[in-house]
Amino acid sequence: MTQDTLKMPEPSIILGLESSCDETAAALVRRLDDGNVEVLSERIASQDDKHEAFGGVVPEIAARAHVERMDGLVKEVMDEAKVSWNEIGGVAATSGPGLIGGVLVGLMTGKAISLAQDIPFMAVNHLEGHALSPRLTGKIEFPYLLLLVSGGHCQFLLVKNLGEYERLGSTIDDAPGEAFDKTAKLMGLGFPGGPAVERWSEKGDKNAVDLPRPLLKKKDTLDMSFAGLKTAVRRAVELEPINDQRKADICASFQLAVADILAKRSEQAMRLYKERLGSEVCQFVVAGGVAANKSLRARLEISAAQEGFTFASPPMKWCTDNAAMIALVGLEKFERRQFDDLDVNARARWPLDSAAASASPAYGGGRRGAKA
Ligand code: KG4
Ligand code: ZN
Image (cartoon, rainbow, N blue to C red):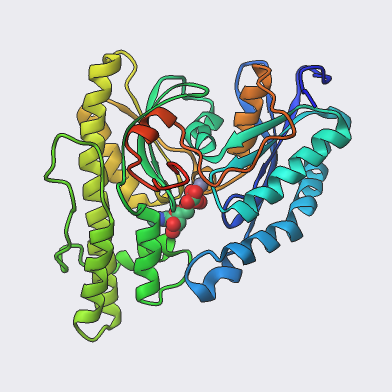
């Protein structure tokens, strides 16, 4: 089925669906006359309680939970915004990268709505959602330098326009969010680990535990590494009997190590950005779940000021996984008539800059191609 002939009412409300990891989410957005985007309603159903016992996301449990919640969330956002089907011009769903069982739930729901309501369908790259999420606030124009830092990803991207991304560097192994989650799991602090580690850090001494900053001595790259840091945290946990103060110290020291790595590499990335794009528009944007970390944000804000960049980060609710960012990408694609056919597949791996990812599959590379 080709989507070119479908009806396209203007201006239109776009429905966005997200289910690539452990948040089931739906949102409605529309473009306002002043060019800004309005989020009419949004719902996020967290699955934290379902995964907590395992200290990480269990794909099969996640997929089942998405199935149970997705259609109910669509009804809830429509009811809240008092929007009927004939006011919705298009539907967008995350089609990857992510846990394939979960991705399929949102994707199939989106396709079914497209077919039943005879409206265009937009397949959205989850990473593109994070990359454009700061634009939900209405203040960020292209181009900008993005640090995307989440549970599955860590990369610097030149964001030039919708669909135009250049990866400058990325983690060569684990993502920082994963390291936060593992740190919390090792000490039984709860799931998701990021907010727990952040809370415990407040009572800790950030200089108490000597932890490595892997790869940071290498100055000719923007790549990063967090696997060695994770191992060092495990050793620190096992080294001596653990009490609450030691837990807090490890958390604070770990958080500082992550901030050091990200801040140093961000400063380098900003310098490279200026070499590439000049210093006329210098915006540094941080997005993704780990960007919710307050001390990290504060640290990166200092780095940005030092390099002559403005700093922006979406509000917390749009840093972690959400459907407003997916609906936004859907809206931007819709306005450019970039519709997808209904035979589009779910993709576990889907790098934003495929050229860079193929040349150097720094993270998640493998037989099935680069993930990020
Ligand atoms: O973007 P996101 O919701 O999902 C992915 O696409 O990965 O990010 C989730 C990650 C988790 O690893 C979580 O522990 C981390 O973001 N995170 C945080 C904080 N809030 C969430 N990490 C550090 N500090 C936080 N406050
Ligand atoms: Zn995400």
